[in-house]
Length: 196
Image (cartoon, rainbow, N blue to C red; front, side, top):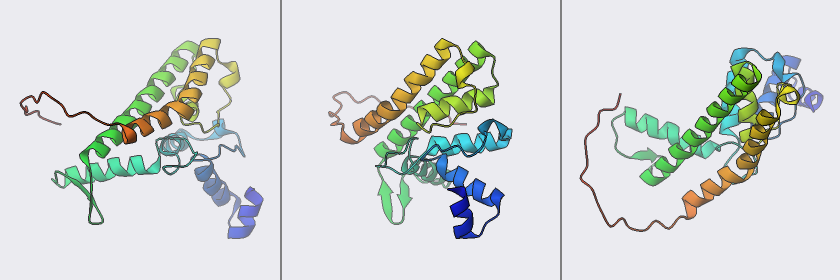
């Protein structure tokens, strides 16, 4: 696969590997080299790409590109002092922004807690543990090679993450879209809070 990419684009081996790696982290999970050989910064970039995943409606894992896009546009709108998120003369509903933020925070929190558990239980580096948990939760299929040496409890955590990543994230996303929210009967007074 990488040789055909190299021929098609006329790229050097390093450029081809970089392009292939950035694509496979978001969709396929093909390992053409030892993932443990990546530097710490490369693993951090890989973690982010795995978290983002593919496009909405696809079978790729992750929280999806649209979710991350909505969060970034919301942050940009807030930084500019706007109360609504607007993209190309269209306004994104506040509920969609809240749903995207909640989903992203949930996946980030699960990944962090899972990585902390693996790191403590098996004395592996936090970078490798985070790589494993994000890969499992976002159903990427890549590993740094530590999975087989993990204890049974850590392997069960990864199995649960893979199951949740395939069914749970999709179910939560569909639930956000299809939920018929009943009108709240009680409305409390607003309070002012200081952010930052």
